[in-house]
Length: 347
Image (cartoon, rainbow, N blue to C red; front, side):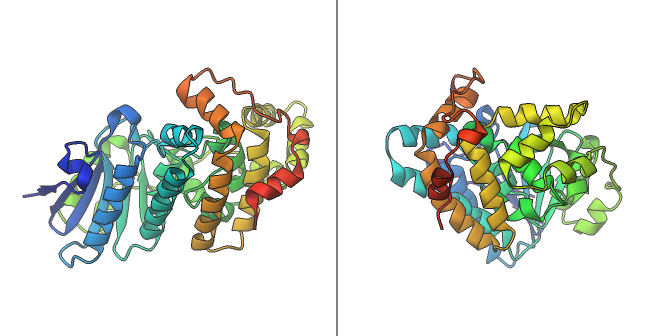
């Protein structure tokens, strides 16, 4: 019989958004914050980190399974609205505390000593990828929706994305990081962000087998199959091979008659121009950096970017007022001061 465990101070106060079950050598972490689509607040990050540390040293637990209690989302990201409020309050310490804890959790997932399995049936964005993509096995369904949409809120792809995005097929990482384009499950497998594709109807049985201690190979093999993708990988490689934002956007704008290219121009037009330049610089640096180096760099850059007007404005427009009409400054990519990008990206 499964043993349900609740951990952390928040759970004592009856506020925990993390549930855990331990049975048959499997420790399961269940994300349960439905109103926020499982967005990771400070308590969830802290509880998940402590749980994984404990289980990593527990010889009775052989596999870790991470799931969502709700169909709409695996994890929609970090608690960005709270971060914005900290920025408006001038509370830089709270921002640093949050990102330090989140990135520490992402590093732990990447280095976890036991099989770590994430089942993604719904949205997995931003911080949701930090607790899944770094793990050994990432199972997606046709309902999965994968994205790094940070440039639209005046931020940049973090949670180690500056490490894993540059290691995707040519152009794909820059495309995802700049545009915030969304991938369905099969596409995520095709580019390497997920490892297995399973039909949503088969996911409960798969989860049940894993919980019962069935080996991962035996549980996954009959339910997963090769995937097909209609992603325009050649176009992505052609248009997103240059980290010079002016050249990249110019190439897309010059593709007269290419509807896909013009759609990408539209997505880039929704982003903070400064964030586009910062993202391109960070992904370029990430090509030759370790995950730990990328996370350290993201922590430093994140503190600076959160203090900019574009971050407060972007989060307001997308997540607070939801008018989708941010007034970014500067408003165009060619008006971005290279010195400001260098200041934000730093060493």
